[in-house]
Structures are given as structure tokens and as C-alpha cells.
Length: 111
Image (tube, rainbow, N blue to C red; front, side, top):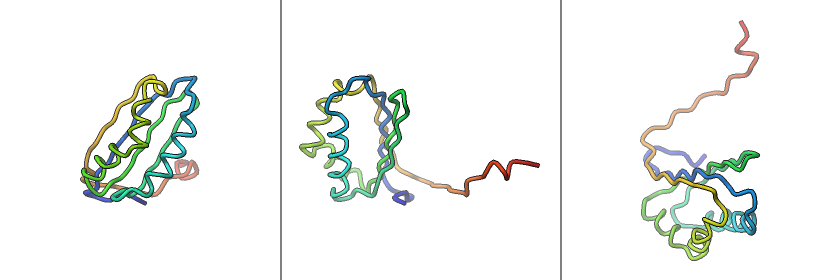
């Protein structure tokens, strides 16, 4: 798991347009490319049937995030954001504390 206290976290919350030509291929290429970026720790991503999505990426430093933002392929994708997204938000923060626990099954909820 890439999560660790003190790491930098980028949370990208978006709503994809119903017609977003080129998005899927670009997203696939960038997901592969980011894995080779210095300071990248990992990411998780979800998108629902209505196009709402969340991507959480983990980084060693704020500088690593800035380098990724300036990466030529990523910068080209950012320039196309209005073509692909109805709206988006980016939140950059530090993970001060991380808590985890076991998932409870439906069976364990029964008296």
C-alpha cells in the first residue's frame, strides 16, 4: 500500500463528460507513465457509471508533485481538461495520520 504518514496526497475528484474523445487512451498512458516518476508512491482510482471519479495519488514530496504536473505528457493532458471533464477539483495535502481496520462482513452485523 502506498499510504504512509507524512506522504503528500493529491486527490482528484472529477465528473467526466459523456463524450470525451481520447480520454481513455490518454488516462491509460498517463497511469503507466506516472509509475516511473521520481517520488511517486502509488495511486488508486474509481469511476462510477455516471462518470464521477476519484483518483488518489501518493507522493514523497511536494516537489515530486510539481515535477509530475510539469511533465510534458501530463501538461498536454491538463490542457485538454475542458474537453474531458464537466468539472473537477484537485486537493493537495499531507497525510498526517492513517487509520485502517478490517472490513466487517454483513454476517458480523447480525445479532
